[in-house]
Length: 453
Image (tube, rainbow, N blue to C red; front, side):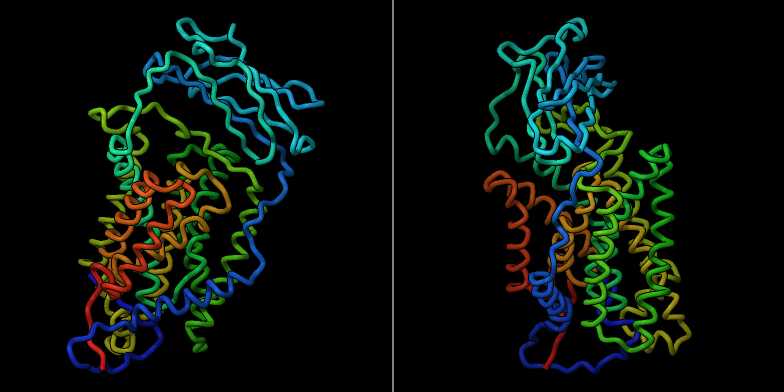
């Protein structure tokens, strides 16, 4: 199912035909030309990646698991962190086996001695033979993780082939989450023709909003998620009503609107950086969970299964809505030919506004779930933006199913790439696939083939 690739206020152009059924590259070029221009602009623009100073201090996190007891969390263990020249800071592991020690900002770059009190280990739990009960870390990032080895070493030496099932599982989960954000991006592009570079920050909005509700206001996570989605709907309406709609009505070109989206991207990213600081936050609930083994192939958690289920249901509802509802048919009509749609009585502005609201809600929900994997940071959107573009191009521009299929392919490819190349470079495989698809099948795997001439 195609959404379309023409701006909401641009009259349709007559199609021409050429020899040999040459596939049209018009949609691809309209999507990639602004993307390439934006990359040039981003290359010379001031970077927003630099992390602000950790004004709120530093955090040392300790996670204790007993490998002799099915990797169960170890609760009630006293942990002490002593920065050089400072006083000892104490914490006790909670029911998830997690302890957080807050270090004042004045100890930036200092060395911290982290000690585990073995006398507080519960009955049946003991430090692994030869494993130290104290470790030294340096405060060069806002959050530093420390792991103490408890229980027998029952690890099996795994080959790369043994890790393939787990990589596929993780890739499918990541792909499902990313598919919601990619679907929103594809819907906006299909109905307006806009390559929206601020879409990644809408993903960040979901993570930050849920975190603030959950950790700062004490709202239960299961209630914070729907509140975030409703807030995202409002944000989508506001940005279309007061930004994109006025630009469309003034006849502003798509390149100029794309540049506006880049400016909005920088503004929102720095705004979120001001709110969260440089540290990576986590939710108060469901941050960790005991994993269950699936036939010895991979480990899954109930949380991940619920997230995958929610993603599938949401994607199915959106696709069904676009296919069978009156609003969905109007959306496809506007995407295919906005002038003709307006002539038949369809309120084009209302349809485009609805697309913005739905697209923003999908991005925010994806950000809420991505925070479980990446943590709540102002850089979430920046980390996934190019992957979202790749998913849309690989699957097919303006194709609802293409956004889903492209996201799943990109997700699995990223995880499998980590088996053969350094994890820091695993996204390169997805971008290489993007180049290959554009060379072999420019309209994408599920894109519509056209003729020009």
